[in-house]
Length: 562
Image 1: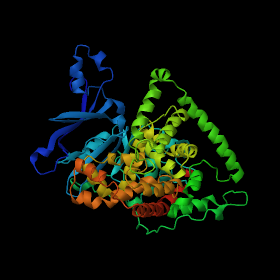
Image 2: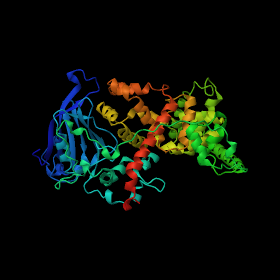
Image 3: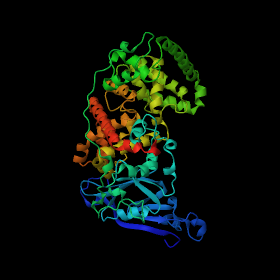
Image 4: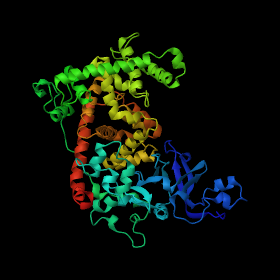
């Protein structure tokens, strides 16, 4: 580091734990961590030095306070990894119940680094070194989770209207997070956490104490190794309410006025959320839940909608049906969509009589609707998993046109899941992680210690709304509940929390590693009881809502939050 670089911090005795059982000495990888500064123009400043040597050193620079020029490095016998502090999104420090102290760093791309186990302490010193370049603000719901942002960030001075985290119907951070699975991201939380920190902590909380020389530093913890056990006093959850399910909606006529309008859409949604819909009414009610029919439309207007939408559908269907083989040979995108659809159709719900057997007309309808959707939304086209969404719609409506327009309504809710960037899926997994940490920190600590804190094993659950986890009949009941958007638009994440909490005894008690955790979660398919999961998820929602009233509402009365 004599080439112009500066070593800011170094600590030995930091280990990576492999995914194997901790039963022998070969499952820990020793190494050391460093924080180093580098010079942006080192290649021109030191032309006599071989470039490969500089890249290997990874940290030669003059003193500066730009986090982009400061690297966090881990180096061990197996190799190394690094992360610019400007790319650090969060860090979580914890002590697992068996006594292992560790820290997990997560990048702004949503990717957690391997958990770092500090066998000889040193995490407090590491945090102090980081504080020279970035702010570390504790999460309002978990004092062990710190969110990172630059010292010169103007985010705290932005209005909450600009951040778009609040709306008239729900003006606090927790409920906004629950209601909007896409717009409210961890980036938004990082912008407001420092503001909320003082308001959410009681005055006697240690987190209100700051030394004059370093007002932004995390509270000096107890001597290691016990300092990682930090309580989040301001976000304690009360008891989880017990809830009950209701009877399915079985009387549709009572909600129709003489012209066929729905007199009380909210009541209909509440009944559907509480108990679902009897099979005989699903075909009609689903078209309202998925936006094919407006809630305030008359019977006559719905007849007109059917006529217009039928014409529109077949105009789009003709577009791909009229493409010749020669034309398709020059259209790789359409050819690729067709190939994917044909492959997926042949393996979608084949155990269901509506799609079973060869030359089944249900399979042809499935194929044609999906191909027509490619014409409707050519930018998205077809992505694996969309056939899983269409099959129940086609089964219930038994109609090509109606199933197509119901699919477009469903895709309005979940189309971000299928975008190539997968940003929406990453955001939902991050949000699920935040919820689970608030509900069950010990389970999160365990998953973190097993390289499973990203919750990647929940990806399929969220992508196609549990289609592969429950029976076909259960999915019909589940989706109509979720389409009500009650009690919040993020209810599918609360379901995931309920499932994971139900498995905590098996996961922690059996000391699973990454591979066996993945195997165990996959083996839950068709073994979960839907009604139990729905009850627990609603209980979680009410538990969080009670916490919101007790903690967040007084904060919202402050003028700057109005």
